[in-house]
Amino acid sequence: MRNRLIVMARAPRYGVGKRRLAAGAGELAAWRFQRLNLLRLLRCLGRDPRWQLSVAVTPDRGRLPSGAGHIARQPQGQGDLGARMARALAHAPTGPIVLIGADIPDVRPAEVARAFHLLGANDWVFGPAEDGGYWLIGARRRPRLRLPFAGVRWSHPQTLADTLANLKDQRVGLVAQLADVDEASDLERLERDRLRWDRLMRDR
Image (cartoon, rainbow, N blue to C red):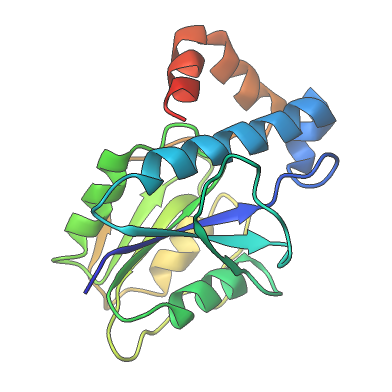
């Protein structure tokens, strides 16, 4: 059973998405970050033979940036984040599956590979985010997969805690905690470290 990796992404459009980032950093900076980081992720992770990569896009007919290459895409559908992740998990073929967000600059193939490795001994795996959410969720799929999203407060400091509370009788592994870019201060911190930013962009 092949490992499957799905990037949950909003199709980059000027003036749409990353509203908190745009409010502080401007529409151009928010659009540029969305576009560049998504391209970097797809190019970096799409070359790895350890998994099959696809993108779950919102809106459903949204277009990926030019330069993304020939990567399979699927619609996220309607509903909150939990409903959209549940759809991606439920509709994928049987086998280990990992979902990641598209706004985490420090995602590397090694962390994704570790997530799949942990699914060998765990039912679920999570990558905690610094804001209390998670940048990665993975499942060792079985014929019937009980999803852990009921009652979860999304975009909340307790998002990960709420999700884990639904998995008390399941084995759960954790990979590294990473930071996403939601606010202007997050982007400023990234850009202040010019060497890190340049390295991230070279990884595209």
